[in-house]
Length: 244
Image (cartoon, rainbow, N blue to C red; front, top):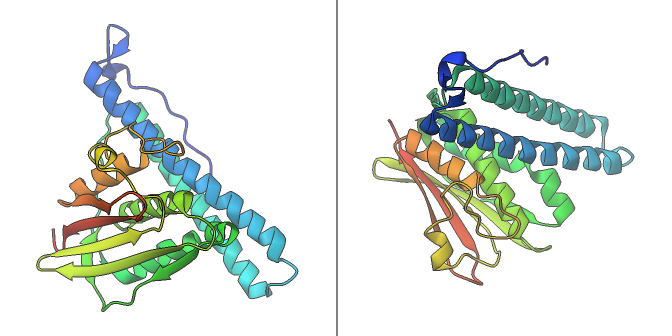
């Protein structure tokens, strides 16, 4: 897919520089895009490594399915980069939310399926807790990016043999989806700041992914929270109104 040529909008400049607020917003927008692009590049690398190891033992159908999934990741990566370029060209960092009716459990399964190659390589078990059908109106692509980020973080802190669990639920007029790991946990001090942009909770973090996840949650009228204690793992919970 060819990326469109782009140039910065001269109207976004004052005395040859971006206004401070616009510059900060665009820096955040570029950071979100680059962070998710990095995650997708890791997913592509893991998928290619899986294909290299599996081509002699897997069926043609399994290999074709994996190739199709990698193609979908490439398509999403292209869309994210194009959106970032458009934001830079227009000087706008507004997050567009396009609502559609989505079954939350199916979306969770999609997210798990997308990261299974990385989990296989890391020796980590992925589990989806069973639940009844939960329908809600969300931006499917944005919430899937949130789950990609949460699962990617969980994989980073998981030792070989650990389990990552994803679960869905409904509480009154809200729906929730959680990602739980068995990692080292997060201190109370760090929990107070991990959703801030460029504030990382560990050596492997960039301080971008959770800030983006919180932004998506708020754009849906919801929030992202964490339940954790050191040595006991972490559970991140995305909670949003069932019908915005």
